[in-house]
Each structure stands twice: as C-alpha cells, then as structure tokens.
Image (cartoon, rainbow, N blue to C red):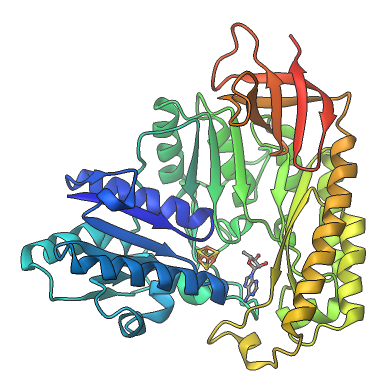
Length: 448
Ligand code: 5AD
Ligand code: SF4
C-alpha cells in the first residue's frame, strides 16, 4: 500500500515519523509525497498547546471524511496527542482506524497489516508508555539526520504535557547510538543532531550507558560530553548538534566539549521559559534567572561565539507586569540569537492547569508581540556583529530564493547565503566571510 505521514510538533516527532516510515517501507509499503495518493495516512501529533491538538483533530476529521469515497483507506494517529487522549480520540474522530502512543510506534506495521486483513471495523489503541523498543530506522539519507539519544522526560515542569505523553526518561546505550551514526555516515550523512527532551540528562540515571567506565585521565567523564566525544570519532561526521538543553547540564565539561571537540557546533537551544524567579519556581524549572544567566556565561567563557536560542512562555498563571518585565530584562542580558515565544495554554492533567489561567488572551497576545519585537532588535544587533568575520558553513546547494547563490548553515545554526565557487560541492565545509546581515540571515563569499 502507499502511505503518507503528516507531522505536527517538534524535531522529536519529525524523527519518529521518519522511523515509522522506514518501518513501513521495510514491511513493503511505499511512501508517497502527497496525502491524496496515499492508502494509509498517519497523523503524528503534538499536545504541547491546545491549538496543536485542534489542528490535528481537524486534519483527522477531514481525512476520515475522505473514507466515504475511499472506504479501504486507513487513517491512524500517533504521537503525543494519541498518547494523551487514548480512547477519547475515537470519540472525537469516530471512524479513525488506529491510535498508537509514543512508545508503541513499532507496532504500526502490524496494526496496518491487521486492519488490512480484517477489512477494517476493528480499532487499535496502544498507549503503553514503558517500552524502550521504539523504531530507529532511517529513510534514504540527506546531508543531515536526527538521532534520538534520550526518550521521554523525568522533569516535572508544571505546564508541560511531555512527561505524560512521552513517558519516563530512557537513555539509549552509547554503542547503539554510535552504530546508528556510523551507518548514517556511510550513507553520506555529514551532520547529526542528537535528540532528547532534556538531552543533557543523557546517562544520568543509574543504568550505565557506556560499556566501561571512563578511563582515568580522559578528557570527559560526564555521560553526555563522553557521548559527544565518541560520536565525533565516527569517520565522516563533520558536525554534531543536540537539542534541547537545560541549565543544569551546562557544566564546565559541556563547555569544554563545545570548545575542544571540533565537530560540536557552537549553538545550544536552552529554553528559559521566564525571567521571573517567582514564575520559574511555580513552573518548577529548577533554576533562578541568575543561575540561568550563569549557565549561559559559563558556555560563553569557553566559546565566546556560541549562539544561544530559547523558548519563553508568556501569560503563565499569575504572571504580573513585573514578572513580564523581568523576562524582558533577562532577554536583554542573555542576548539570545533567537527566541520562540509561546502563549500559555493549560494542558489537562498538568499542575499549571489547576491554577487560574488569569492572564487575558489580549494580554498574552500583547506580551507575545512585545517579546518578538525585543528579540528582533537583539537579533539584528547580534547578526550585525558577524559582518567582516568568517563563519564555517556546511554547503547545501542552491538557495531556494535565488538559484545562483548557495545556502547553508553556519555552526551557530544561522542561514548563510554565499556565491558558489568551483570545486565546492554539497556537503563540503567552507569558510565564508560575511558582508551583510539581516535579522534571520547572513550573506557573504567563500574565502579560500
Ligand atoms: N503552554 C504554552 N507553551 C508551552 N510549552 C510547553 N508547554 C506549554 C504550555 N502548556 C512551550 C515551552 C517549551 C516549548 C516546546 O513549548 O516553551 O519549551
Ligand atoms: Fe514534541 Fe512536546 Fe509536541 Fe510531543 S508535545 S510533539 S514532545 S513538542
């Protein structure tokens, strides 16, 4: 059969969709580039905000309506919303064929085979959250690939659905990760992004993730920096990125890994959520604004050019004007390269959903806009600092807007547009001197 996976949400979901697609291809199905041509359509969902769920439910409704003309079509839902809603998803979308939660994705090929054999009529629901055996296959590789290193999340941030949706933390053994990266490198991948909800927590639980303890006198002893070190040794991998960070993981060892492992890109996505200590405490983030800034400074003292990006929630329950101003102040001091701003959305079952959602929609909107404008100003100033300097770019090929110029990303994860040079190919690392910048993009030419 032909299939199409529609993906909402974060990079984690993009990665899970790829692995499920690979498992369906292995079972003999064919991926098609458009939903209309597909016999099986799966929606991979996000629960992080109510809007994301509404979008997915709307999409599923439309897809299920298409079964009137195409009765043999199979429509399924996977990911965080499938996990969170369980059987209630069938109340919202009655003709859905299956709902498979975050840790049960490996069952999808069997579920599809069962539905196909039975001609429909039977619904599948699997939401066991304890499994670690999630699919890790890859499709035909591009230059860059995602590799999941940590499943789930053990933090208990008051607003967040992720621990409920993705289950407890589990670190994959380092050997399994290195083998996967080596396999990708052989297929032409040059850049890997190691994924985990709180990726710096890698290997911090009791189970060992390395075959042997770190030998005495080696550069790194903490599990995540060690993982970076072993992944960097895989031949062919020229860049390593990872996401998302938490200040508790921004140790001196991590800062050294950024500085001393050449493949590790100088960029960290380090969600701060708020700049008010009172709100951070209610959010149970486990740090104060000063501690967050100290973590950023620690990284910058080792790698002055590191790019830091963040997530911020506006309108969290009880957020006053003074709390909001504290967030603006933190943004000014942290000089983020980019910020993703979200309006608080109460998620069922989380502690913050028990609190009064007392910041009005208009006020959330206003605070959102103020922070976006603040970030734009900071972004312009940050990018202007690159003019006249060199960055290292992974050449990706002709730019989408102007095929005569090439584009790629620098280590700091900014898009760089440059003139192609003879002898430079896709996948090469090139040095580019920046001559112009706007808030989102740098422009320059290759220096030889
Ligand atoms: N409401 C709004 N934003 C949220 N996020 C997580 N939970 C919520 C919520 N309930 C944001 C956080 C997180 C990002 C992925 O989504 O900023 O870092
Ligand atoms: Fe990703 Fe969180 Fe959305 Fe799940 S709920 S898809 S983990 S952002």
